[in-house]
Amino acid sequence: MNEEMSELSFEAALARLEEITTQIQKSDIGLEKSLELFKEGDKLAKKASALLENAKLSLEEYQKGEQ
Image (cartoon, rainbow, N blue to C red):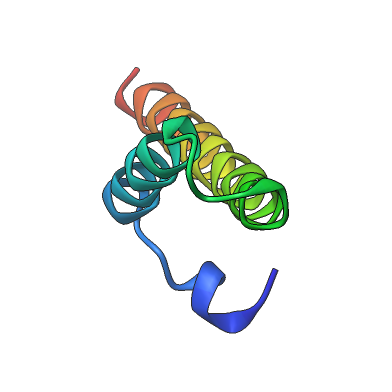
């Protein structure tokens, strides 16, 4: 992942994924652009998933400390 991708928040990644989905659904962007957007979307989905997993682990650690 590039530096810009690593700086994204979950909300920003999700918003960009929504934009990409809308663009891909348009039939007038062409195959090459669709492929480019798909690749970007895949990276964003992985980033968002990692952020969610980190949040989950953080909550689990917090809950363990509260016991």
